[in-house]
Image (cartoon, rainbow, N blue to C red; front, side, top):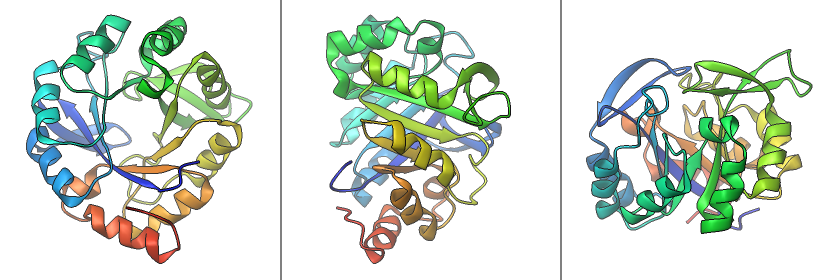
Amino acid sequence: MSVVTRVIPCLDVAAGRVVKGVNFENLREMGDPVELAREYFEQGADELTFLDVTATVDERATMYDVVRRTAEEVFIPLTVGGGVRTTDDVARLQGVGADKVGVNSAAIARPDLLSEIADRFGAQALVLSLDVKRSSRTPSGFVVTTHGGRTETDLDALAWAREAIDRGAGELLVNSIDADGTKQGFDLELIRLMRELSSVPVIASGGAGAPEHFPPAVTAGADAVLAASVFHSGQLTIDDVKRALRAEGIDAR
């Protein structure tokens, strides 16, 4: 849907440090979120996504101080997710510098949260974060998970995405748990299916490992591409990804 494809580094944070694992397991420390945010901003990232990956599991709020210090270092849109349960949480996050909020587990527990956020702040401020696994238990073959991929729900991923859009979600952040951290490429089938149903932008996440993995995700229907470990490790830069996109005729800033 977007005219220009966005490249978005993701900062998965636990205990104040950026972490990354494979299939959301065996998390290892990758650095300081504020320093990495500054580096990605200087590299030319279009947006940043900040996910407090243990906030829901630990049943606590997002670390507002880290968000504030991150927002002070970057002047591009910042999406923050993890532990968002009420509209007051959104207001507080916006107060420390978040432009958008990502909601996952809390919306599944209480879907009305989506419409409450959209009604108060606008759809443009609301990102539905989907952690999706392949499953034979659902009609689409994809099931929604919660708590950082640890818990499978009974929700069909495509049906839930459609409902969330109807309730006011302004963007879908679609993360493949199966591909996450594997560096084998995005789940293109999942992206295509989400694009077919979605009237809002789709962000592809999970599986990026090389520059050539990004263009197929856009061709499959992604409006933005998100990655974490390949950037944190220095394996790829933002410019590496944008050059790969442009080489395939895809517009990138």
